[in-house]
Image (cartoon, rainbow, N blue to C red; front, side):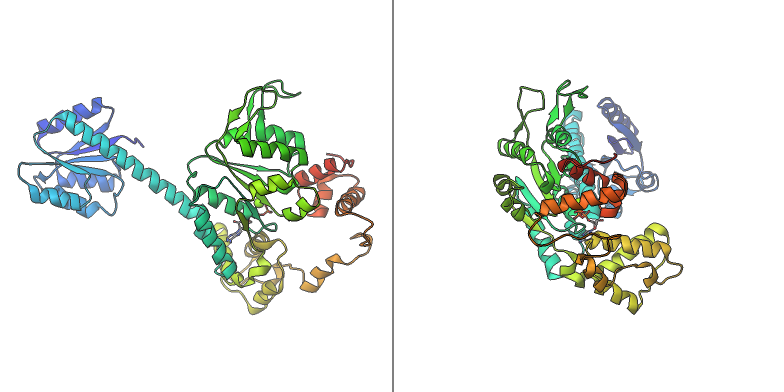
Length: 465
Ligand SMILES: Nc1ncnc2c1ncn2[C@@H]1O[C@H](COP(=O)(O)OP(=O)(O)OP(=O)(O)O)[C@@H](O)[C@H]1O
Ligand SMILES: [Mg+2]
């Protein structure tokens, strides 16, 4: 739809034509009507949503103010300017009360009128922008979309409400997998002052070190083999907006140093370039690892940790706020119903018990996926336990026990292996059992191919890609 539409309501044919000619020249899409009734049909039935309405007060079939009053709740994104006759003070007062942008006494110069129309257009555009923005935010990325009325979630929300109002330079969101870290990063961006600038997201575990560096800082053509064209890195792409570094704990130590420098100086250099570029970015880093522990182990730079950790948002695991299941379960089921045109509305006591007894190691994401499966496979209105397929708490806790060689593996907890050696050992074992097939090994380890590939490189293991 044209954004520069002007509706003129004027019954004096000559004046109407003159105004139309003038504003068409000024690049407006102009429509002229000569009665209240036609104006109403134009605004309501044809749904034409003009940016500005320029209206006479008294028309042959009524008063345009009555029309404004009647339509106001529906057409709140147009600005109205009234042309008044001499001495109609009462009408002018009413116009302003009804939220008209302004009024001007006839006869008036077209240039003055034009200034008024331009001002009204700016105001209407600003209102529309704000409206669009708030609509988008409210639906998807508002703080309120973070469900849960437990003390843990309530205090998380109130913390976020404070944080979106301060221009933080960097912040860490930490929490187990599936707790909503990604969701929170988006909420922080889209509810904050940088909402209209880009949010650029990168998963630090998904790329090997060299690629990650090239993605973050960009490169010039010929910077390395395969760099055919200049590439703007994520820092540049996120300029004036937010850079979301997911799984920051997986970043290579020496890349961490480069990141620290970039964050401190707010300047970057593309690979293969001599010139530094200033960037204005806010950083949100997420991790499901204990960074303090990683710092203690020498796996994460202490200075980078302190630099990023200006604000720390800890997202609770679902185990810590199981009472929110009461709210989460029906909401997720309702959402799945809408998506799949089902009508699951009955949750038997046994199902509830199973849901509440379970520990939800995959947190809210796991809950959502399990419920989605149940709704999709439901044959009637009941959420049956059959498709929950949750491990009983006992079976889940036996995870840590050494099991038969076929399904699990034995790791000595006698201090002979470091955590990293254990990880390497586990991955090596999974690769052995899958004939070095990364996809199969990733499935076995419950991780993604990207993450596994990254670790395979990190530990210099051999596999088929
Ligand atoms: N409090 C909440 N209310 C509603 N939905 C939530 C809430 N927390 C998480 N979710 C939903 O759970 C899913 C997982 O969230 P998200 O992807 O943000 O988790 P994550 O912490 O980033 O996980 P990972 O560490 O695996 O990347 C998403 O679909 C998200 O919308
Ligand atoms: Mg995530």
